[in-house]
Amino acid sequence: MNLKLRFALLFTFFVTVILFVFSITIYFLFYNYRESDYFERVKNEGLELYEAYSKSKQLKDNNASVIINILHNSTIFDQRVVVLDPDGKIVNKIPESIHPVIDPQIIQHIKSEKQYVWYSENNYQNAGLVLNASGQILISTGYDKNGFDKIYKLRLIIIIVLIGGLLITAFTSFFFVREAFKPLTNLGLQMKQTDLQNLGKRLKVSENNGEINEIARNFNGMLERLEKAFIVQKNFVNHASHELRTPLATMLSQTESALGREMTVPEYKKLLLSLKEEQQELIELTNSLLLISQFSENEQGKEWPMLRIDEVLYETVSNSKRRLPELSVQISFNPMPENDSDFIIHGNETLLKSAFFNLVKNAFLYSVDHTVFITVESQGAGILVHIDNKGMQLPADEKENIMQPFFRGSNALRTKGYGLGLSIVDRFITIHKGNVTYTPINNDINRFTVSLEKASNNIG
Image (cartoon, rainbow, N blue to C red):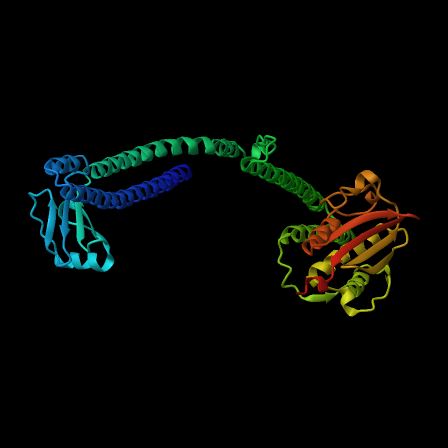
């Protein structure tokens, strides 16, 4: 069952239930009103008939029977009036031809309650009351023929209205749901036409703030993010293929050259050293590509242990000096922390060391004196790590792309590399909910700043 049919059926069901409840309520309200009203009429008209009869008797009117019959026929349908003495014996009855049988329990109810109403056979309604003047009991009986006819007609009208309301509601609900879902249906058709070949195509969005337009805006936003991701992925694959092809082609040409001629032992050794260098660069490139693709921004950092940022930096510097013998590093704190918690973060030690190593290596390679300055600063809820070096600064138009894979600035033309180091840094720091920025400052100083959140902010 599709969504439109489900909504239409639910709408029809609820409207039908509401119509049914209101109809039943109207029916029972009218039924109760008719019942109570007729009981009151039976009682009042019985009293009037009795009073008229009594007065005619007192005046000794010879035409009393004729007057009573006329009055009786002009009142309620098939009315009967019986007057009993306090002992329950019949004193008077109108008309004279009737032979009523009164249940003693009914008489007892009338005496105890002074007024009593009840139904007898064939839906005749009876009203009994004690006449205060004489203590006699008056019982008036009648059949509400007109009222029961109205009840029957009302029941028939309600059934017709319910059936008609059900049919009209069903038709209206299907039409309403179709019109209400038309924007959503059109939106679905547009989404269905979106694929990899036309990611740049956007859904139509009007100026109003309806739910459908909100969905369309969100979908367009998703398409923009996907388009950017596919462009980045495509460029990454193209650059990776190009960078991998270069060392492989070099190694292949050297190998073919060696196989095509006789070489001396020193020449073979020189060739093997060259191949080893190319292989090391290939391994480094492969490892960098794996690091970039291995970790995503959705890594769960809540289970990471607490680390001291200064210890991570000292271990990174020690490892960097072993790999880069000419490296000189100076670490300072601005200011010195007064509390140990100021430099504690939640993080993955391996990822952070890799990120800081790439920053130190980058600063070393592009510095004029192979000296790197690291400054650790506690600032409010965060920790800032500044990594500075002295060297050629990047122009303004290259700063925005510095974190992109395989991008190499104009200051890197004489330095070997693949432009992946800063991409790795950006990926790993982003995983830690931090950020990396590049800022050129005075005296040809290049500054990379890593911002991380303190562990104390996540407690509680």
